[in-house]
Amino acid sequence: MYRYSLSYYLFIFTFTCSLSANAQNLTLKEAINSALTNYGTIKAKESYTKASKNSIQQTKREYLPNLNLSAQQDYGTINGQNGPAYGLGGLGTASSGPPLAKQNWNAAFGALYLANMNWDFFTFGKIKQRIKIANEAYQRDQDDLNQEKFQHTIKVSSAYLNLLAAQRLTKSQEKNLERATTFKNTATIRAKNGIIAGVDSSFANAELSSAKIALTKAKDIEQEQANRLGILMGITSVSFNLDTTSITRIPSNLVNDTAKSTHPLLKFYRDRIAVSNAQVDYFKRLYYPSISLFGVVQGRGSGFSTDYIVDQTAFTSNYFNGINPVRGNYLVGIGASWNLTTILRNKPQVRAQQYISEGLKNEYELVNQQLNAQLTLADAKLKNAFSNYNEAPIQVKAAAEAYLQKSTLYKNGLTNLVDLTQALFTLNRAETDRDIAYTNVWQALLLKAAALGNYELFITEF
Image (spheres, rainbow, N blue to C red):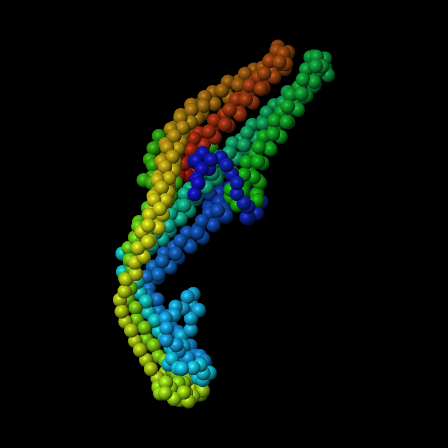
């Protein structure tokens, strides 16, 4: 089974919708619970896990002995002939009678009642190894489900943060539109009164249109992010009222490097190796014989008399006389079955499975390297995001003061339109950088939690 890198799971979203909802207040934990409940792949892997669990019981019951009951009632002749014969493909008959000098068509009823028991009670560990394979497969499927839930939780959290950032950017563009509208109204009035040139009014209209377009783009991005979150949650809602309290602050613990003893993804890859190694051991045990106990109880009836060999009229066509069992036999024994050519046939299969185990180990090492690289990247991103977070308020404050100053000067005719427009642009950019900086701190922490396999590092902050 081919698996993608962790970064792929963080940013690629392809899922199916199963529920519908209107605009709603939504916390991150509620979004995760909805996603884990409704997402189709998770529900599918839950079913696969249940199937693997039942396969364990089925494999254990293969150790039970075979017990066959058989009853047959027949009508036919019993002409016999001296000579060897082999019922190739089951095409021989079971008629038994004296080898007479010539053919006759005397027929009577007969019956055979049989109970057969066969038990491979000692197989040199074949059955035990098959049970081990079933247990390992169940553990693999269980951990596959756990890592799928973990990966999906990361993806939902990332989409939630992206939507929060998109909503903040929309609000920033709304504020920018308000400023541009005020700026346009002021310029229009001053142009009508002849205080400034008419071109200033036209330029102000252009800035207003630019602010409207920026707001529309921000809303489009917000709707797109809401749709992605809804898909991940398994619902069709494209409007959410999110919890904004967390994103206005930074996480309280940015230096926690606590990792779980086993990353869910690494544990799943180790389980794949364990299943393959168990299959190697099972194939090796096929080299050995199986020792069986068996027993047969048989009853038989016939319409032919015991002296039929000398008197061919000594038979009856009566149905009830023919099916009445008058002879019985039993047989018990122990035997061994060993196909020596199995050793030659299974050696390539053992080698092939060993190569598969080596390949799975290589995949495990690759995923481990990717997670280590992801952790290093997350630490760097966290450091950079925190630095930008500290700078963002300073930038916004300075840009807001500059805009207020230029706006006041422009109203009093002490500066030109270009300077005011530049101040407006700088303030809008500063607010956008601030919104992105806040989100990037949380995204970096989420990336670190994903690399460590410790989602509690992130979710405890909410």
